[in-house]
Length: 206
Image 1 (tube, rainbow, N blue to C red):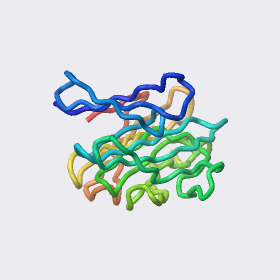
Image 2: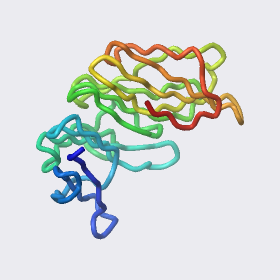
Image 3: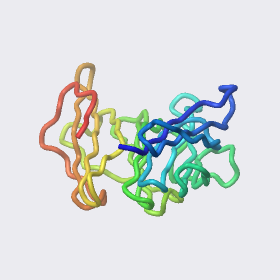
Image 4: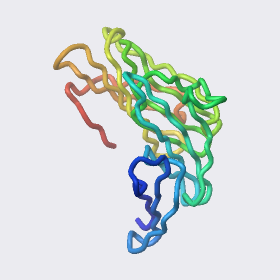
């Protein structure tokens, strides 16, 4: 209720350098930090540790991203990973292809990046067990009849070390966009699909 972070664009709006504002008193006062990124998906595990997945789509179904980590509440940031093919030594765990829709971390080591890829039946779910240094695709069991659907995922949400949910949208045809909820009881090692779905379900919150 007292701690929060807000992104702000750089003054020239085109720079890759941005601003991050932090409050520890419920928004009454804010501290400004310069950042090596200009926006992205942000998540703080606790007061000190946080991650940002930054990057814009680079073309049709191409998306280079960079993962940054802070251990001092956002004052300084370290580049942990990038899949940008223009950067020497870029990683290959997260593919350059496909749109990255969201990111979430369960703790400082285990995290997920989700999105969508323009190939039916492709599950765009990638997991790290080392704080974002390496990534590997995680599979999901699809329901019968959905192997050729267009699949889009939102990052998982955890309620404690073991229990979490993963929203997955599967589109069969126009008007048939079905929202399934996958559940984990083992910290995201495995996921079990809900037996029912919400047709035309566009948003999920637990």
